[in-house]
Length: 585
Image (cartoon, rainbow, N blue to C red; front, side, top):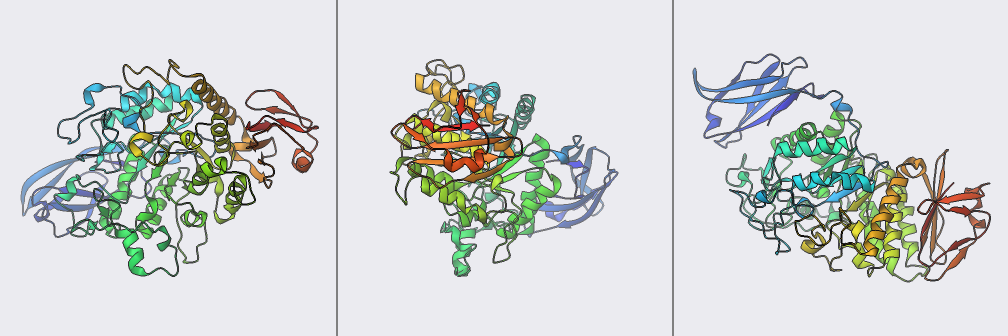
């Protein structure tokens, strides 16, 4: 849509779309801008311009003339902007942050006038669990103080870009215009203003990017830029969803191809990132949103489904432009070896070298309901969590994993724990104190429930208080039950303490084999040690601390970080049934 002077790589490619534009010859005359070439794809209405932007190019708008012979047939205006100071040095999210995940359509409706929009197929219907409910950027902005007050430092909204699909468009993952915020959320300018307002409250924003596919309502479907712009352009051929086929040294090539090139669902055509024009488009689109909206991170959807070589090129391009940035990829699999394959720095047998810094820790997340619900035996309960954490040697940097109790693709954990608040608190505590970057799904703090089997429209429930007339309001506390208030206060206290704990945000982890329904681990650095006890015992118990003396050393008194009460570290630690604890000293 536009570009910037002073980007690390001076090359820029511009897609031009217009009737029979490929028949014309472009011409540019602007200080510091050189047209180095044009590319045609055999599609009459597309022309790709290769530009070189000099470091001293003049910011501002300039004209691109399209000629037939000596005659100018049409003109277009393009704009170069000056970059923000220190834009390339922006800090991305890391383990010192806590991330709040929002589904924008379900969070807060600040502007009912944009619930439905002219030219967009699906209209608002709050009574439909799979329909659009009207949440928007204004509603999100109105509640930034709430998020900051809870102790979060980053916000991850699911995709905000246009989804002009007839049904099921609220989630945002069927993008139909890669450069336009969906008008039912607001405008591009509203999005940029939202990020500015977040920054004013010391909150960063992580954008959800989709590289693997688009929606069937995308304008490309009516006029593809190239014959091979999509995989299986003739129509729906489903992926086999077999994630193992990429690293598997024994996989049949055609089955690996089916995983990578098949469509995710019928309404999500698969992009062919092996086409260099597609690859360049997607890379530049990501850089454009980072620069335009002033982002603090990217979360990339359905990561492993896209072409692996493209993914390495894409992630490296982003990190080269912004060396302190961060990207977290979604490899939705419960096997640590499959997640680890995609992390930068891992030495893979096939030689694949990823550029992706961070991944979502589905192996831990998917264990937690069973870990907390199951009886304690030699093979069930906390030992499974211990053994999964023990697999961290597979990762290049486990501190860069994003860990979470649940998210927009998992049933609400509170429901899966049979609405046991003590067990939920244990999960919240673990998420905040284990290695990695903690992320929490909106409404977890007020005990939103869902069916225990995945039902997307219900687990992505409306945030209480986000709509006029709501009888319960999470933002003000009106109508919350005592349990909801307790959970909200617990998470607030936990996250505010976490901001002060260097041992948790940047220290080492050492853990002990679980015994008698208790899993003890320590986070530590040269300034502080934190002892965490995850407690599944359904009876009051006294924990003998002798076993942990090598980590306790000479410490005699600690502090319960959630109650501020002193803890005697020279005597057995008394634990009430199902009450987990974190002690700093």
